[in-house]
Image (cartoon, rainbow, N blue to C red; front, side, top):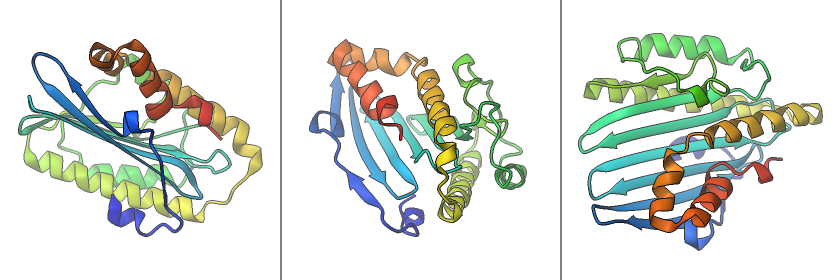
Length: 226
């Protein structure tokens, strides 16, 4: 991801509150370390990368890129989950902000071509109920069974991100899109927050107040949509 972001001008780092930038969650069974980085560009108000690793073998990568609301851009949303030496879940979507969950016309053909080339043999997973209101028809929810599946997915992520960044650089701001795009980003956050598994894990170690602030201020902050 870093080499691709190097092609974008005016990337700046956003300070993450110290209580959230590097977090240790511990219980009697294991210890989980979480690191958070947030960047911004003229086209994206927030590029959030969360990396988590536990001494019991759990590994998580979570990345969401929130466009500024005047740009006609979907939300890049990536999740990778592994345990030990096995990757168990891969999700990548360019989540639409439109009411009908359609993407800008330039995206569909490129995504379909990449999926045929790289992901045709990778086992699919069903869409969870909370995802049906935010994922596009091109969303990839996968259960890889080989290292080749994982390598192909990583190449798909690289190619999709490169395409998305290229579209962002050629996109022109349009204030008339703000209301629709703000509503679409809020919908994305609201339905992501319905997936309560992460909140329960955080609350068990840090308490409900801390978990709510982490979910609402770091992961899916609706109050900063602009």
